[in-house]
Length: 235
Image (cartoon, rainbow, N blue to C red; front, side):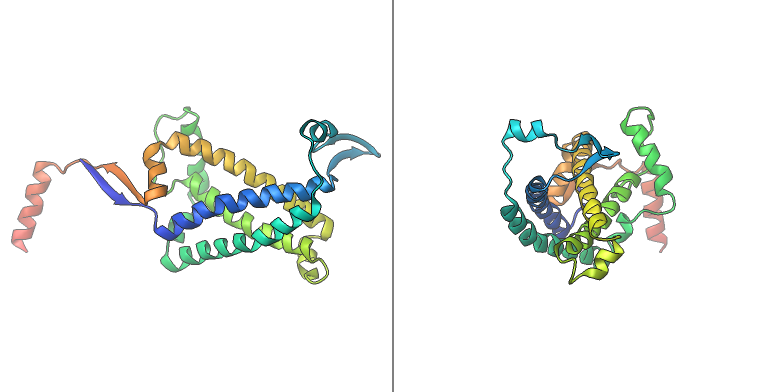
């Protein structure tokens, strides 16, 4: 018997979908800033072996050096990114949804079983409530990454005014590296997330849009139903 069950509250769905265009603009504008000053390389004894974006990349795509435009968009949408994240985290804490999101002591062991199941190495799917162990770890990690992006971003944006943040990050240059690494992490997370959504199927995707999912519930055996009715009469 198919039953409609509520899965995702409205605010969690709203912040989830709003975060996608905001983060996309943040990454695009961040690349405009980076392309204006392409500094990250793999260099040994003044010999550069690898550049993150080789010169042929710029020549082939005619990449513009729009530093001012990139900074304007990046620092504007930073506030929307921070506000959206604040709403999401606040709601999960107040509503108690964090209990289903934060990993527990069994999550890391069960997450490995989820990976093996997704790779079709393990046949039996690990136990899952609203989120499985791998999702708990990934979704918690993305929140920590968002907080890290804000800290490192502010340290880069105002290194004098927020000198204590720059100090926490290990200095201005290290803060830039952390900020860049976190951006790569977002891209990798997005790619894996999309693959997982495809593997999970339409029912899971629909629940993130509507908030409800359709599940199959097996009817109770006749003996159990009669037992329940007997208990009710006794009471």
